[in-house]
Length: 248
Image 1 (cartoon, helix red, strand yellow):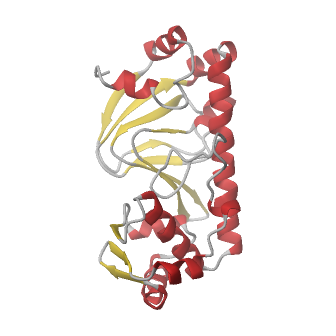
Image 2 (cartoon, rainbow, N blue to C red; image 1 turned 90 degrees about the vertical axis):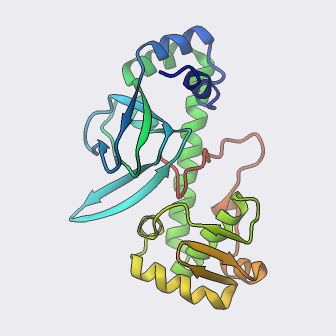
């Protein structure tokens, strides 16, 4: 691994409270690797052999069934996947592929589980991470089931603007097809929904979104803390923020 990568990994909430000796032991078996774009990293149903830490680049988590495919999350640096399968020693429930050239650290799950059992602070961090991811999944499911497609995209745009510092204009961080899949829509429905939002304070030019009337956008989105978050200060929110969602 490169000299700067270990401190960056150590600073992640998952690892920052564990004993230094245990962190060093965990990193002894880990290694970094560069992957080209559009490469499948893991496949759903396969055993969980490694916890992946994205150092650079972007990774899509996705699932397939019955000839259909959906985006579950997009992971950016520094982010991890898929912790739950690694701790349970269970098959992956999602596949992962690189969206661009990426550098990823792979940590053997056998080492991860061994240190989980002997380092109480690390165990607490794992539980906090998993609890946050679970709550993020519940919030996303509530949005899919309780909001219309227009309300979902309005809510996502308002949240994205807030993440960027309440800016009035920003570029979509992922392709529209990925965003559509994550929001439970077809690309065509997403495009129609975005165009229909012109009457609700949003304009679109290619990948650039401009919020022209924030009050009207919020009136459509109806932000709700129990769907959109965040959790109270000090609680685990599960928002080591990927671009569109969180891994569970």
